[in-house]
Structure formats: C-alpha cells, structure tokens
Image 1: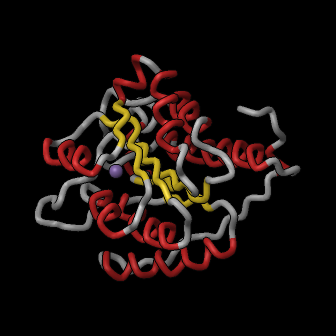
Image 2: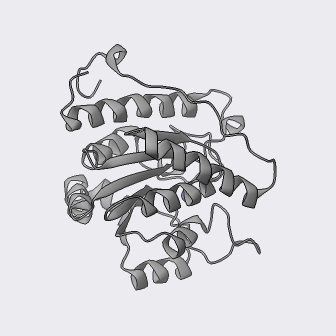
Image 3: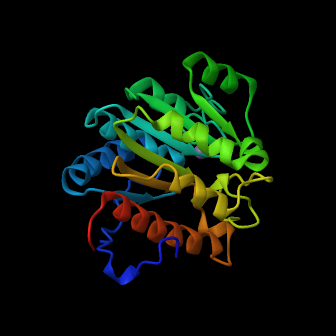
Length: 241
Ligand SMILES: [Mn+2]
C-alpha cells in the first residue's frame, strides 16, 4: 500500500514457532538465542512475533554481538527500564534495562513513550537514551521524525522492537498492558518509514495477546505491518523483486 508494490513478489518465509518450555524463562531465553544465532546467519531481514517483551533480550544479545554500531529503536508506551518489577528481574517491565546492561548497543531510541516511573526516566537520562514521547509525536510529527532520523544516523545496523501497546488500544486492544492516548497505525508507519533502510536487520512485534482481542484486529494489524515494513525495506535495499 505505501509503495504501490505487488505483494505477491515478496519472498517471505514463515519459519513457524520456537518451541518453548512453559514457564521456564531462563531456558526459553537460551532457546531463542540459539534460534537467532542461526537466523541472523541465514536471513537478511527477520520479523519476530511474540508475547512477552522479554523475547527481545536474547534477540538483542545476538544482534549486538554480530553487528557494527548496533542500535535499537523501541516503539513502546513504556520504557521497560525498571530494575525489578514485583520482585522479578527479567520481565516485560525490565527488559530494556537488561538489554542495555548486557548487549553493547551504540544507540537506543524510544518512541511513543507515555507511561513511566521516575526511576526509568532518570535511568534513561543517565545513560543518554533518546526518548521521543507520544506527546512529541502528536504535537509535532515532523519534528519527532527529524529527531529519530538524527538519532539513528550514526548506526551501523538497526533492530526495531515494536511493543504493540505503543499503538492506541482503540486499534490494538490485544496487548497485555493497554495504555490509552497511544499512536495511530499511520503514525507508526510514518515513523518506521523514517527508520527503514538497508541497515534494518530485525523487527519484533511483542506483547501481542490475542486472547484479549476476540476481534483479532491486533493480529491483523501486525500482519499488515510485516508486509508494509518488508516492502519498504526491499525498496530501500534497491533490490528488484
Ligand atoms: Mn514493552
């Protein structure tokens, strides 16, 4: 739709699910890491769809260890920078904290932020992480896009993590922690259009929780985003498909 391209020409392969050990976070992190070591050796662009945002931790580790100037662009209503949440050190509320501690990232940019605690804001400031608030996007989209483009300018490779709660619950109710006053799907596409080029390697779509959305609108939106992002990426790669 964005580029008026024929989607049938896209070579997208569905690789199925990673087999997880129910309830065993540590084991699952190991498994996902192993799978991504293989995927990043094999594929030029990888989309990962999941539930818990912790999915991004093993992916970021592998990504950072294999990239030159690796950067993450995180679209999320939250910063996920708490040190612990309800006594748990590794979960959806702490995942970016664990990532910046364990993966050697060149830059981290948050977009669409609108629900935080003081500890997270202070940590982001301390580490020099760029935060483009949801309000910045609403009040001056072009200014926000300029900031995002500038932030990723020195990056060698880019990993985009889309926590679906960045989108307003009116469009994407199928998430674990719905957060009102969110971005529209079009705003998300405009943001991605300014981030996607040949440096993009991974996109994840997390916190998708279909049981919270009997309409399946959230899943349909994710499928659409995968197609649009792939098409823009191929165009920017300059490839003929
Ligand atoms: Mn998150």
